[in-house]
Length: 434
Image 1 (spheres, rainbow, N blue to C red):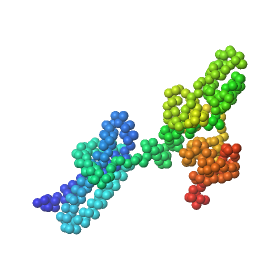
Image 2: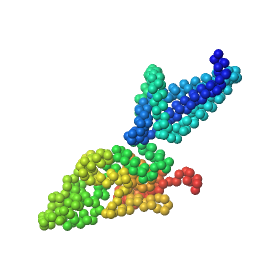
Image 3: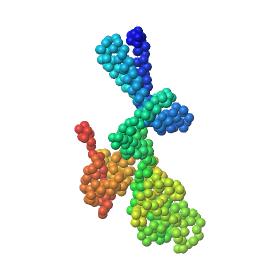
């Protein structure tokens, strides 16, 4: 009786197969869309009151149960469609119907239930996940218990094999993932170079320390506190900075910080003769911070103390340099200059593609200016990188090649490299084209 009904109603059989393939396409599209949906965008839409985005976020919170339910539903309808199509074709063509059913269902399942819905879903994952959120939630209500039972069985089996799922080290931190995503978007042209650098600088505040961005003590502008009043005024006027460290007897002995505005107020109101005037009456207390302080912590400290300058010291308490609030902000937004800044010729581009750079130039600044990728883990300055790689203090005229660049020492003063020429080496493809 059943065979007669199948033979008499081929359109019913075709409808059942099409229905099963439609469900299979639905499960495939839902799995791909929810896997590729942007969590940040969904949270933003949920915050603006989108109910469908809230459903998507709830589904993503039970990702393991969700994926299991979708896979179960997908396999059940695929097997059901294949079995029903086989029984129908066997009725019409006999034993050869098995071959026809296998070929036909393989093509239909791969094209219409797998490749096509997944291609559509991955092209617009956010929009597809929002559209399918409600029906997937409905199916999860029925298939969820089956998925949980299957997961429990699988985990029990893995424990018997002494495999502990879920206990593995993360390959990338959240910061690394975000930075990698921004780099990828920049390579694809969706994010500009300035935006990429700004976002990358913000993420690296926890990785960098104040020693990476400070002004070294050999380049730090400071004033001898024993100078007479007139000389101190001339030193302040000649400096492009408004806050200057004060030292006494030796430059490492920092006794305070002089603010130009405090000096102006004192000049306007003080009636004391120059011989009796003491800079200690207007200087501020120096603030010392360890060299290992992260930029993120130092930025928070600047904001809490309402300070703009701090002296950096090493583990022995010796002054290493000076860090300012502007130095940290420049790691995020790039170089900040005002009308009083002095343009330092630390980097000059040459016509042959190379650059002539000051040895004390920070590697990070050079990378940012030239869009290079020189490593800055072992050294802060470009001269320090050359010394680290050469394992010696090179002489003028020496040339080194490493990290895909050519470094030529142009000038050296005592044990310091003061000027270099850096040029990127041509890539193999560039040499073949040449």
